[in-house]
Length: 257
Length: 278
Image 1 (cartoon, chains in turn green, cyan):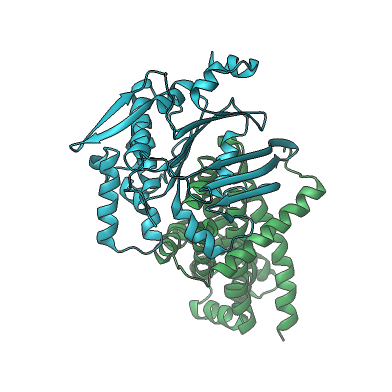
Image 2: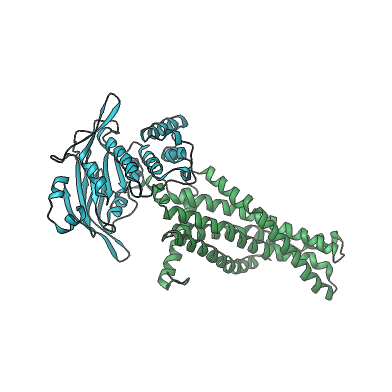
């Protein structure tokens, strides 16, 4: 396990184990007992805890998008379309993807290191010895929390970005706020919203939770192992977010008129 | 069902052993950790598993607890084969066994109370019963005052006692101890050993005690706890006879090389054993 690249056999095995964990977690999510308190704690941690960085992400993404697009648009005399461009880019791609990447960095790393520490200190074994299923108690609440919070965080990020764009459009580009907001609103259709604010965030949220929990649960080799798992969780879930975004976008475009 | 409060000074041999390993082999990767080990623990017995590091002692305990599965052979709890048992059977059997882990393995995000109450709250026991039971077992290990502390605030010995209390809360018939005194000073170790002897002799809890510290092993094999008038006294036998319910098992490279009472172990002329107990 020296390098980051595992052997092909180990990689296939790992994909299988991760898929198996996802399957088990989804199945157990609908079975008693429901750890409501653990789910709420995780939702608070994932949702409320990530609010600041998500707002900042949306804020500056919106700002820079407006600046860049306005300077291009003004060359064609189409400053009025700035709103559309900012809204469509944010809702379709930047909001869900950047939001998920930030959550992977903040929440995914936390999950991997927490579960990893519990593994190396035998707390997970102790839990099993006490008759509790660690997937149910540890993985399911984290999965449900990210899957439910990620769409909300994405909405916050996009809304921050669009409104930040409004400030620049009015302040620097001298367009009217109505023009900007109308063009933003008209630019979006139902499929943009369903795809960008629901399908993608739910999927990315599941990716972050499953990958990070798997990385944490397979930790071995003490404190160093925990560090390695944390890094892997962030790297793998970030990559998977980018790769799956490509395929999800294809799928969404296929279904949109 | 529960005989935790029963008279444990008599040796009662049940029909099926509480725990049985039948010809168990276990690999970690390419390393064979256990090589055809058979083992049985009957009700009322305590077995002390000795062996150097890497001899497969801890793996044996994990197999008994169902935390690992054997590559070949069988693990039976009260006659039920764990490999064939359904989830429901496992749920019934698990509370019968308590385990104390090497480094205590307390849940560090939960308080002492929540740690000890864990198993009871998982099965939905009502609050009052939980509080009573937690106070009772914490009282037994002498840590009632620490009930609201977090594990990080406890010393190593206290953590070990909380771990003992956590395992005892479901009134198990068998306790598995994985090096319960590792890393503790002699006085604290003594205290843990006294608790284990009391559990064995006063409460009749059977046990598997894994260690590489001979001093602890011989303490366990030579002292008995007697309760009279609410006080517990420890009586030391002087090595002339052996406690009938305490047996040694010695592991070497995943194989059992000795099984019997301490007197025979001390007199063994096997070179490895001589070296180990010297």
